[in-house]
Image 1 (cartoon, rainbow, N blue to C red):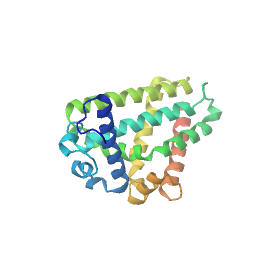
Image 2 (image 1 turned 120 degrees about the vertical axis):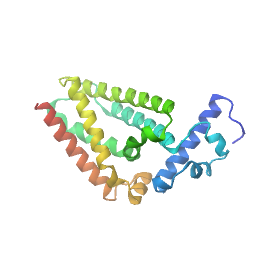
Image 3 (image 1 turned 180 degrees about the horizontal axis):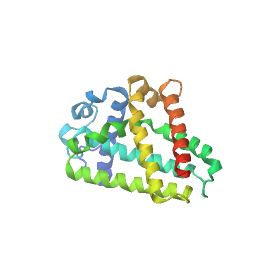
Image 4 (image 1 turned 90 degrees about the vertical axis):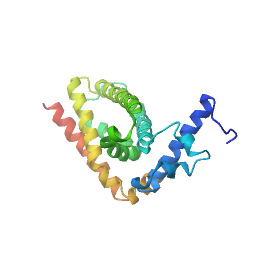
Length: 216
């Protein structure tokens, strides 16, 4: 790094990304409870006091990472989705590619389950408000995508699909949050049990959920 104090927006973005990169690396290699502002700062090439200019708590760091992950997930879903509506006979295909893409973002799943109950207690109010606003923007973007794919569904039905999907993700997360699963996520490897279990269960869940929604 050839600058000491980050003055320009570009330099600040570099430091912001440095912090997030170190936090993500530790998420995959350490127990979440052992990750602290101090442990993150020890791997940075600037003082901890400078880290506090960007984030106040580790939850704030990981919540910011979560928003990034959700945005990437939705963008990949949009790119993989057809331009036209999906027929009910194509639900199986939809569930398969939706699941395949979701399984590429297991870090998002772990973060979502970890952070949801901690928001109010561990993230400063101003930052929390911004994070929630960003999450809602992406959530509505996901709703819009699903409504384009399934125009016969009502807005309420689309919202239910999104809500139940996130609930399943949060509920299943403990099964893929152990050390072996973290190693698996980091290496993008499909050989261990946790990922296939989630993949099969999530795909079946989506199919059952959609069939149920269409039949109501």
